[in-house]
Amino acid sequence: MTGAQNIDNGFTFVRSSCPITNGLDIFGDRWTLLIIRDLILGKRRYQDLISSPENIASNILADRLRRLETAGLVTRRAYQQKPERHEYFLTEKGRDLKPVLEAISQWAKKHSPGTAVFGPVD
Amino acid sequence: MTGAQNIDNGFTFVRSSCPITNGLDIFGDRWTLLIIRDLILGKRRYQDLISSPENIASNILADRLRRLETAGLVTRRAYQQKPERHEYFLTEKGRDLKPVLEAISQWAKKHSPGTAVFGPVD
Image 1 (cartoon, chains in turn purple, yellow):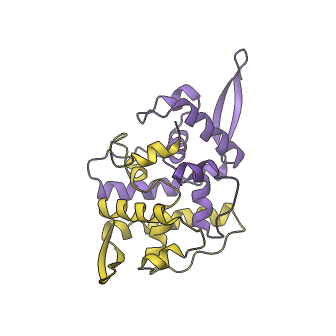
Image 2: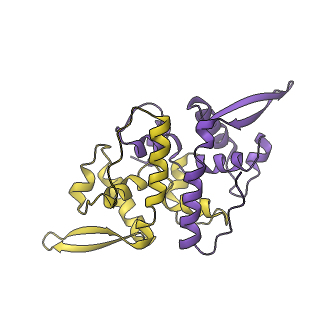
């Protein structure tokens, strides 16, 4: 069994009542918190999100945005018709992950000294 | 492309210089932080780790412990020969993830009110 099966089933079962598990069932993969990082930093549009240096694949980005919307962390608003295009916004539930990102950033700045400083998050 | 490919290649390439990305390349999956949670809570042995309520598969647990050792977050010490059995300990680098777990726990306690309280972490 690979991690993929678990990730793909992320919203279909509850693994335990532990709050950490519950959080990881929503954002515990290699991409979701990076999307939330970008939204916190002010990115709104698909083309902006996909241009991040980690080179997320388009199908993964679309899938994660859909999951984040389902989980209530992201909302979207159409800014153009024909073709329809959306902007994505964090809800309070999504913005409240900022301390998680900051804690990860602090850890990595201490233990992976080669990494760049995480920019201001307001 | 699925998340699994990315997770399986977690230690083989650097996605970007962002410290968050760098952290997620080590523990950004649905299992690794749960293993670290258990080690922080005092579990030491494979049988204790595998008995957690999330029902981690044995091959995933073994893989993640090996990765954590490679990444310098965990050390192991043989406590028995024939058959050889090990105890696992967090290094400082591993223990320093406690604020990440606490931030996730705070988020989930606010946004997933059904989850149990995360016990004392000392």
